[in-house]
Length: 148
Image (tube, rainbow, N blue to C red; front, top):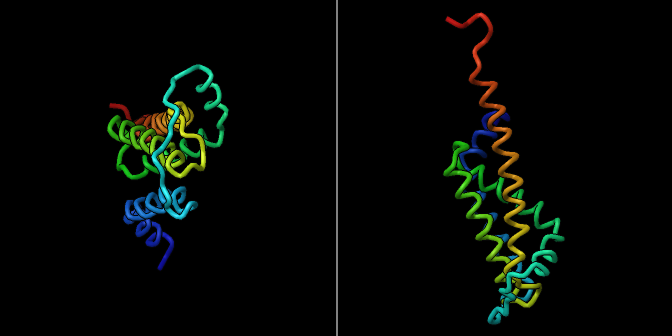
């Protein structure tokens, strides 16, 4: 199988790979405790102190920015629909991770910890829209001398 055909096969099955990855990733936090879950005790206070603590989580910003891009790859076009759903999915995953950490008692379950996840998604969104705008500009400009 040549590399072009293999790449086309992977691209056509990207949604299945994404779904399998998500099932695996979401199950990792509960799996650490043998799926022993408790009622989550989450800190839902939206305070400046909590927000400052949350914004120190640079790995969350990077990982959730990457997740935003992985989610965006599931769509065929860069448009508002893709950006909106990718952002919603990123924030939803952030909330789920916080609930899992609270239910397994393996981390801090703070509502403000979703803030760096959203910031990572917004940074990735800005990068993606910038790249899309540049590519669109280069692909839609007519070559010199072709104007009529």
